[in-house]
Length: 68
View 1: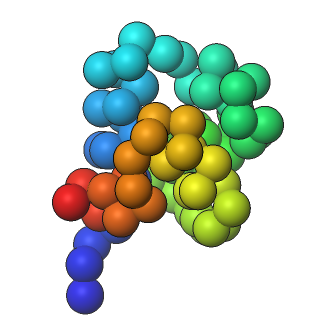
View 2: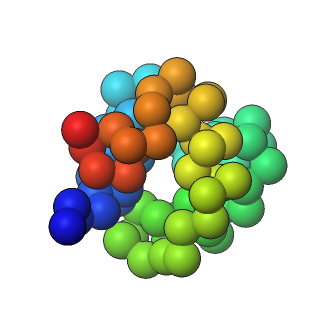
């Protein structure tokens, strides 16, 4: 079973795109507290939220979740 690496991948995407969690929350409608939980390695991970983040960064859900 693959290990979820959303915290690392999301953190790197934010850094690479020079965007804050606050701005991502504003752009996607996902509460900032939820994004902060993701960045801290906590869940749960709702599919619709993962999809919204993946679409925002133009990456696959698999890459976002597993870093692959």
